[in-house]
Length: 335
Image 1 (cartoon, rainbow, N blue to C red):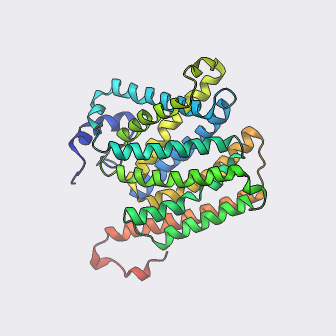
Image 2: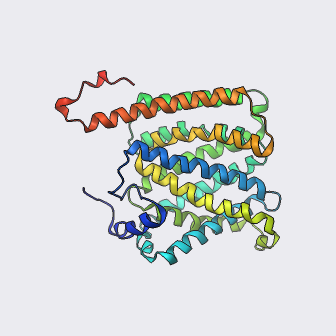
Image 3: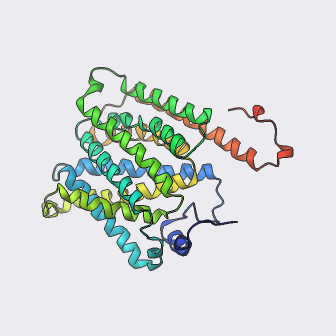
């Protein structure tokens, strides 16, 4: 099997596989089909982002948003730094060839994070995550224009049904247009640009390098607006939330980068819709936020769209592996 990854990526692949799990783009030992890999990596992404949202809520009583983002980047840098000490071979995966794209991705991502984290303190968790999912439409459009990805009916259908599910959950009205909703919508546009940049980086960069440069670039950005001594205000009871913030911040982007490595952006992003019903349950469980039939109905539409898209992608992958002489006409493969 041909491996087009750069030499520095191949050199660190064994260490990344042993320490952080399989690197989808570089490992030839993973037997799972691509669609299964995308789903598994996205499960890790969903759980990580939900844990990060809860950690931000818990820390907001003590720290400002800029201080929370600084703490996230600092904790993430400690984690990846420890990995570099334990596995020195990972250093070979780090280079500055695409530092400009890393800087662009992380600057936009930092701004979007600031808006998103601020909105978490002003709106119910389910509302924030639901409004955030105007992002897939932007990502699909940008991925099609900038990366040349195909727009299949099932992918478009997954986004359309996902957005319908969002509207069912939100039941748009006067309350939906809280000024803080504009923060989320702007953040969603920023996240879509970051997603496209991430997908582009996965063609040449290791997952470890993407996560490393994210924390290196975002830490000084956060410290610009933070109290230099903010860490002295943290007590022992805040350490679990701080640890959750750092670990979830690293794992979310590690899983997301590998999901993009395993599949097209327009396949990966619709899976992220599952964050809405998941965070709605978390908000009800931890903070007593209302959970009603509309959340269940909206989640049903989201899952329906995902199942349709995943089923179609799986059938297309199977058909692509069958010799042309045995393959049925494309019209015979139901969507």
